[in-house]
Structure formats: structure tokens, C-alpha cells
Amino acid sequence: MNLNATLFAQFVVFFILAGFTMKFVWPPLMKALDERTKKIADGLAAADRGKADLAAAEKRVQAELATARDEGQKRIGEAEKRAQMIIDDAKKTASEEAARIVINAKADADQQVTKAREGLRNEVATLAVKGAEQILKREVNAAAHADLLNQLKTEL
Image (cartoon, rainbow, N blue to C red):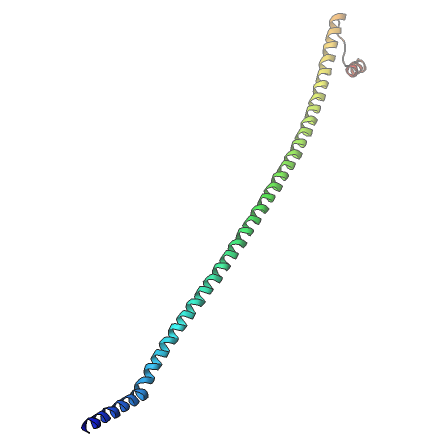
């Protein structure tokens, strides 16, 4: 029986060791394994959330870029319209200024023509008096014949 007693003793020690392991060693090991599993699962979930956040951020960035691009095109269009308006206004102002300059130049030319005519009339009257003086060989009094000279000026 010695063999049976030894076998029985080993069996009892095995069950005691198995009971001790199940009571004191197994729960901390299972707890550590569960915590490790939870950490891995949390890490994988965080990675999935990170991927989803990255995808959402990329979508937002693309949307912002499209909005910025559209807004930039809109501003360029507005700037081109504004530039065209400025050019049109400048052309209009230049045309008005040119017309005003032409009108002023015509008025100045008319005044100069009038002055020149008056000067020429006076010179022609003087020359006519001198010519008449030479023809008559005597002096014609300009003051005495002012009416005659004024009539001569108007005729010229």
C-alpha cells in the first residue's frame, strides 16, 4: 500500500496545490490577462476612432479647401469686375475730360480768331487810312472820320 498511499498523497497534494492555485494564483493571472485584453481592445478601439477621426478631418480639410478655392475664385471674379468698372470709369472720365478740353480749346481758338480779326481790322483800317492819305497826299484825321473808319472796320 505504500504505493497507493504515496499515490494518494501525491493526489491530495496535487488537489491542494490545484485548489491553492485556483484560489490565490489563478484570479490575479486572469485579472492581469483580462486587463491586458482590455488594454489591447481599448487600443484597437482608439486606433479605429483615430482612423475615423482622421478620415473625418480629411473630409473637413477637403471641404474647407473647396470652400476656400470657391471663395478665392469668387473674390477673383469680383476683383476683375471691380477692375473693369474702374477702367470703364476712367475711360468715361477721360472722355469727359477730353470733351471739356476740346470745348475749352475751341472757345480759346474762337477768342483768338476774334482778337486776330479785330487786330486785322484795326491794321487794315490803319493801312486804308495811310493808303488814302498817300492817294490824297494829305493827312486824314482819324478822330474826325471815326464814323467812316468804324464803318470800314465793320465791312472788313
